[in-house]
Image (cartoon, rainbow, N blue to C red; front, side, top):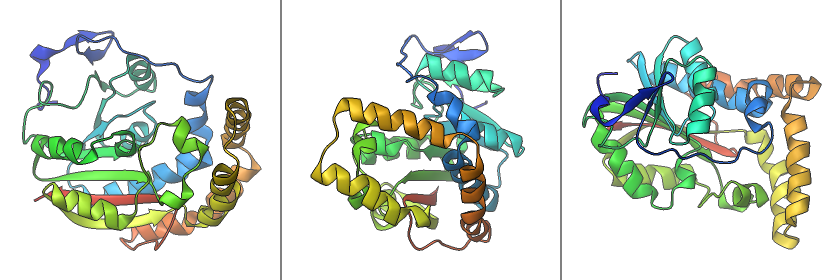
Length: 271
């Protein structure tokens, strides 16, 4: 972790921490669903294939790592991963997953040397940031020349639902919007694709239309959330869906594009 400015951090219980002690409330068991979830498994597989195709470095930084699921997938694939997760309770979960390099701080100049990081992942991150352009400009200053940025975000404004409200999203993207955003902040786009193509129509009719015509109450959202957590768990649905969506993983592994989908995946380099 040569890029880390350790003098601004304290090493406690195997985690590099800044002087904050910020945490959040994790809705019961959400961190447990990722390892057995079709959604996270397929998403992780698509991300991993893109990283394998484009990253020539074994070093990778996962920014806003959450519970560390995608970082763990990269570690298992042989990458040396450092996670940045500003919430201490989530950073501890990353450590419990066996990720060696955990930093509980923001990915910022106070903690990271400029022009030093070879590859950065932002998986379900920038949709949570109001000023996404300024955020990406800040990332640009910290990655090395020709360094890579990998982004996965939810797609299509028309698929907005209560889940976006609950997750405090500011937006959903299209590939065109992402390209424009990245190019405007000094990146050169190398690859882009959608995935979760077969979910677009079901999501629109089962999530987005009900949201438009009858916004659910908080109690209804919690019931739906509890149901979703159960459906995320491993079972015959997960096995069937994994086989059904395998073609997307295959296309991405070959550097080809999926023309539409409920999520966007994009790879860019520092120009």
